Length: 274
Image (cartoon, rainbow, N blue to C red; front, side, top):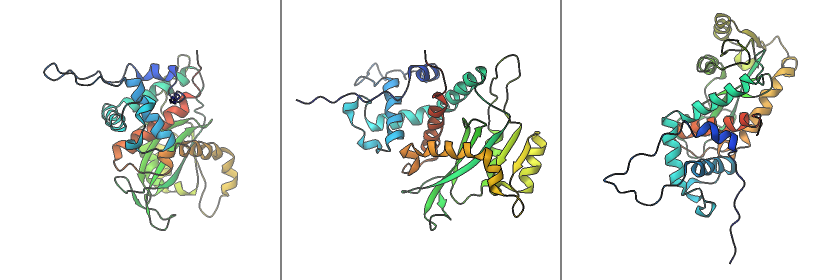
């Protein structure tokens, strides 16, 4: 009889230490009935990360892996997303990196990438770069090293310049090392010509952020690309998570939670292990 080998852990002990205190407690049993044993939260989180990484369908997640059923993972992910778990853990990881001086706020880069949405759903629209097929767009903000600070999901036909304000305004205050005040904005913001808009430049000026955005018809994209390559690299890391590279999830809650978990996993690589 063949034995199924255990898959490698996708959630390190260090990352689980961020998740464990913010996951909501198990709901009380109804009329004292507990039913079948509840799958441990860490195993469910491993299952969610497995689906995110491999792109396997929720209903096809093998029980033999020990993650529980795919529907269990999906339901609990939705519960945690509604409770703000993924946002809080990403902020906690950024706080740790900031306290250790691993975040570089001297400049940030913003860019986006579009993917096909096979089943349509929320936050989708006709993709102008894919013959008008339904798609979504990931907007990613990274620091000078390429560590993801924030991510938003939109329809593929939404213009990049519309998301400069939302992605910066939704940034939480991140701790930094020493006695400095928490930070929520970079010194400079780099972007390609898709962000060359008077409204964007006025907004950045009000926030005290220096705009390093290529001007349409005037600036060469290659010159500013000396700094923007870091966000392009991080976008490639984001799309290495196959559940994001080809979107099947229809709801905004699910795709947003998966994108947030993906950038948290990317940031967690820089957290020192014990």
